[in-house]
Image 1: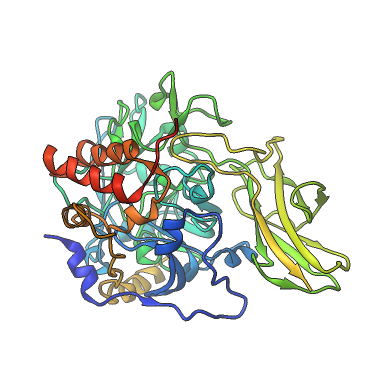
Image 2: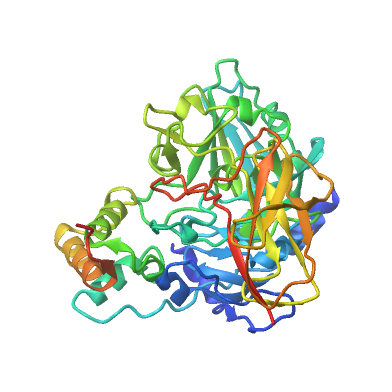
Length: 401
Length: 97
């Protein structure tokens, strides 16, 4: 059965009304011309005014203004699927999680109530797609041409994965945890979306099976009813609609681990390499790179001559942000921004900068962050075939009249 | 966390999600219909427009090959050539010298 017919059956998504106060309604510049031709703001059920890149599979970015706050609301949180067969909420009514593999003592199947009986952990963490800002990479590379909006930061709550795995008993020789979700391919020959984690990350206390997001059930399109949370790592490991876990003595061998989501070996810094999936030439993309974004003012906005506030967020793989600088002149001069208190090592850290009075003209605003470990944003894109880890400082042009 | 079971039941009654929309029309020309039909079988043909215009003809051929070999698209050699030729003619840049 082709589930997408069921999904499509309720009618087409509505095109969003073009003007809402404080919202960016422009299609961001810097994207390929073809992307600009198809991208538009639409209202999804429960998610108004999302930037649609594709509807099958569903890929929707948050408008950049939502990053004015550390916590991204559920109704503005981005949506990313690889395969066009998203489960319907009704399909999840009898949801269960199977745990097996050659490195468990006893395979088990857990119900939602079993997970709710376990002690709940909580983490405020950024979930960022590996391809966030791919669409802004020059020269362009193929893929979903994301803007800045393939990310968000939420309070995730549920049992730690290591507590969930106790039900099955992990053998000492375990090498990886293999993850499967409820979204399935349409074609027989299409590889199911499955990912794996090394044991060390799987057993980290911050790796949790989230049953709630910002104190509410996860939205369907963000992985309802259960999603794996892997703080500090790119979104590709954050399996939505988590339904199967295999603890294995072997590395997972499939398209999604061995071909997709890989970067040249040594190009990006990581604290802990994913050894069982590394080759001499490439490694899986894992830990986030330090990055920042301006959420206000918006690109193209007219700002006050008497002065205005630049604000946004910065984040990294978990070291924490120590410094954010802004430029009012396209990167020639940099000034320290004010950092708000840290809300967690994996969370956004908010920054702001109050300008003095400004002469009339056009200003190119930029921001860049430094992490606790001394990591800085790249001055030039570290070229890689997937267009991953684009953390070259972005720019917003404003006008003082 | 028991309250969540109740909340979950409420979400479960929402039913299906309305997402699908009409893709942008592909540029008319030889191979447009066969390209649209085959690509739309698994994903919106907006993927083609989204990824334009910056790939070369050779890169489009590689994308078609990826869909067949990596994603298992049931497309035979002759049809694949027709699709690649169409994409090269309408959605590609000239190869760099």
